[in-house]
Length: 558
Image (tube, rainbow, N blue to C red; front, side):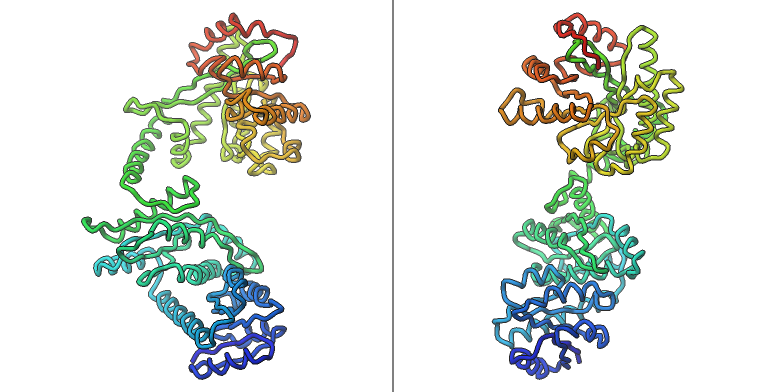
C-alpha cells in the first residue's frame, strides 16, 4: 500500500482529495506547509503530494525537497493553478495536474505517477551498463518493437558528479536525479511503446517504436528537455546534452551493438558541431570515421618523419609600407597527395595526442627559419599559432625558451598568436604563462579579435601586446556606417590599451586606404601577399618593398 504525504493547510480541497485517495487504497498522512520538509524526511513517504494554494508555496518547497539528499529521488506530484504547472515541472515535479480538474482525474494522475515509478525501479533492478542495454535492445529488435534509437550524451557528467561528491553528495545521486527528472519530463512526450534507461553515466538511451511520425521534432524536444536544470545539494545544475538518433530500416538486418553505435556516432556529431538540435545518423558519418582513422595513422607517421610544411604570410607596417613580420601557417599533404585543411588535421592531431609534438616542431622550425633570414640580413618577426590546451601545458614556456635558445634568435623576433575566445576562456590560468613569454621578449597577439567575449576589464589584465582584428570585420570595409563604427571602436580600444592592432584579410586597396586613414598599425592579407614557402619569402618581401606600399613610408615604428 503506497504511503502518501499530502502537504497543504487545512481546507475542503485537502479533505476531499484525501478521502478519494484513501478510497483508492492509499495511506495518507497530512503535513502543514511549515512542517512538510521535516515530516517528509521522517516518514519517507512513497509520494509527496503538494496541494498548492494562493501563497504559491509549492515551487519553493519542491526545490527544498530536491536539495535534500534523503528526498532527492522521492516521487512528487504537484497540484496547482494551470499557469504554475510549467514552473513546477522545471523545479522537479514528477507529475503536475491542474487544480481545477475533478478529484477523480487528480487521483488518476497520482496513480499513473506511482505506476511509472514502480516500472522504473523494476527496470533499474534489471542491471545497468552497456551490455545490459544491448540485451534489452536486441530483444526488442528480435520482436520488431524498435523503430529508432535516440541517445542523449551529457558532457562532463563524471566531472560534475565527482565535484558534487566533494560536497557530501552520494556518488550516484546525480545520475539518479537526472534519470528521475528525465522520466518525469520525457514520459509525456514519448509515444506508447517507448522505453528509456541510462546506458552508463554519460549516455541516456531512448528506444522508440516503429512507424513514428515526426521523429525529428520529437528528438529536438527531447534534447531541449534534457537541458533543463536539476536541483541537487541546494544547487541548480544544468548539464550540456547533445542528441543523436538512428532509424531501423526494414530492409537492413542490424544487431543491437551496431544500432547503438550509430546513435552514439550521431550524438558525437551533434557535440562536435555544437548542435543544439538532434542529429540523425547517416552512412557518411561512418565513412568519415574511417577516413579520420586513416588520417590519424598517416599523421602519426608525419609527426615521426616531420612531413609538415610551414608557409609564411607577410605582415606589413601600414605607415612605413614595409614588412615587419610573417605568420607561420602549418600545412600538411596526406600520403594520397590531398592537402588537408588546417582545421581538420588540427582536430585529428588533438584527438591523437600529437598536437604538442606538432607545435614543438612548428616553433622550432619557425625560429630556425627566422635565424636563417637574419643571416641573410632580413629582419623578420615570425608568429606561431598556439591553442588553449598548449598554453595550459606547464611545459609550454620551456618549449618556447628551448626553441629560442636552439635557434639563437631573441624573444623579440618571435610572436605567439592565440584566439580571443581561447584566452578569455580561462584568463586566470593563462595570465602567468603569457606574462612569462612577454618577459622573454615574445610578442603576445590576440587573434580573431572581435568575435569573442573579451571585456575592457579582462583585456587590461592580460599581457597582450597586439590585437589582430578578425577578417569578418575587415571584409565589408568601408561598408556601412555600422561596419566602420565596429572597426573604429576596436582601433580606439587598442590605443587605450597601448597595444598595436593588425587588420587580417586585407584584400583590396579600398580596405587598405580606409584602414590607413584610421591609423591602423599593421595589415595582413592577399593584397600584401599570399602565404608562401620559406625559400620564396625573401623574394616576396623584395617585391613588396618595391611596389606601391613603399610609398606609405613614415617615421612610425611597429
